[in-house]
Image (cartoon, rainbow, N blue to C red):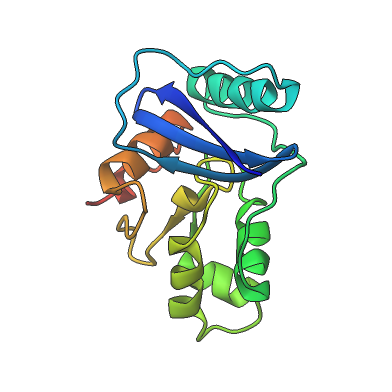
Length: 160
């Protein structure tokens, strides 16, 4: 049985869905909350701590209990994206080449658009080959904020 929690971030409310010590989803929500939802679960509290650390410092260790629901290809893409270090960006083309198919750019983009665990599976670190910020479920303004927060150095390439 899944449970939903809310986390107040600098970018708005995050809706966190867990089930039996598995993180299923982190998505931006239109809910307005005044403070973070409390939990008696040490697992949920650890997710809150990861997010707090991320928003304070721009980096965070990746949790071990991610359980994103998706196809085999989507999970492969999400696992690859988790290897992109904070402060770095890869292009869709670079990731497609790493997957072994330079023509997989659109499929890769589609998989990233379905990422159920935003921020911790950092699909915001993927940009267009031309340096443009393209596609992000949370919106391009949030994508730009996240990349700047992480210290992405090549700010001139962040074109909206």
